[in-house]
Image 1 (cartoon, rainbow, N blue to C red):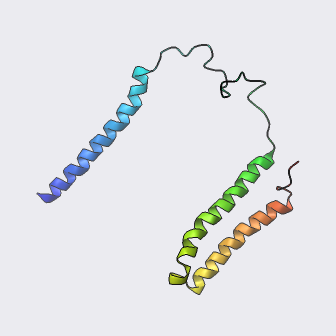
Image 2 (image 1 turned 90 degrees about the horizontal axis):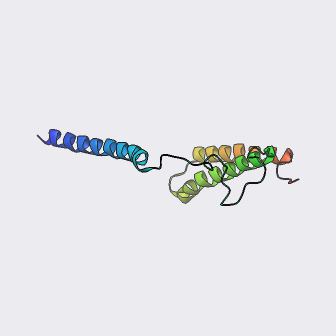
Image 3 (image 1 turned 30 degrees about the vertical axis):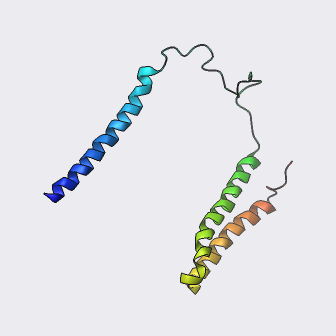
Length: 121
């Protein structure tokens, strides 16, 4: 009887979850306005009147700079927990893996530096 009781909890949560999704999907269709209005297709720029077109070319360096930032961010996010427990559980093999990880990320950053990514024009 206990196993059936446990499955009843799972079924109850499943029904609640599906009901939550259905209600939150259908509710906006029921209460939202039907007409969009003439300004609905205009680009929105913080309440200001838009100037020019929405399709503007950006320099690829902005994208590459963001990718390099993610490399730094990932490096910090992975290294912090490792360094917190380093003295307790780390072995020489783990130190080699960390060094390889840092080497690969450092190589990517040095490559971007060599290509002139960090020089703003």
